[in-house]
Image (cartoon, rainbow, N blue to C red; front, side, top):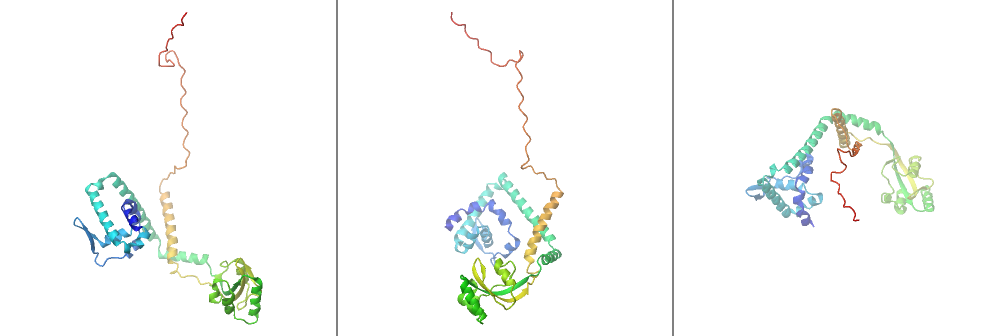
Length: 312
């Protein structure tokens, strides 16, 4: 299967794939594995092809082929050689001066200019002060919430749930009963649930849990779409806001989008932009009516054909 895919690589690794390759983040390029001495892997007409050339080529491949690269090294090296041969032949044919090549290179230049300009604008405007302001806004918009720690037992039958409540009223261990009788995935943890806030659970479950006192269990089964629940509330606490370090990536991404929007707005305000797509086109003028024939302008350029007189 992979040999078939590799056979199509020469087409995929030309100009069409160069744009995404150039668009790779610099950190990705820096994190790419480097050969200790950038060993020579092949030589074409006296020109060395190095391991870094092979790595750069692999990075242009689709993800499914990249994951198989360790098993495809002979084919990959051969393709790097093929690419070098075609490039050399194209340069010898003066393809560097070909109008199509120049046009495609100009398109690539436009792409790279856009990407670098936007990234440098983001780098300049996403300052630490702006990140801290965004963090304060996040804290304001996401205040601490009451959070519950609880266990539950889930069964299919209401009568079974009521029987378990009787056992709990008599002092039975909640976790042990959950392990024995619950059909929910939390049974292996004695029915323990991850801490949750209002809205994390289905409405019936959430309403019942938030109405309970710490240390108590359900006095009646709580019916939901999943079955019948018995809840034990173990703790109430307020959520802890995430640190600015924990939100750093999220805040930077959010601010980067804001900066790009600002940049577009600023550039439009300084420029004259006219959108023609979808604008109604002016109606075509009606064709001029033909002038009536006159003696000076006969109706037909052809001379009339005289008919022979009818036979007597």
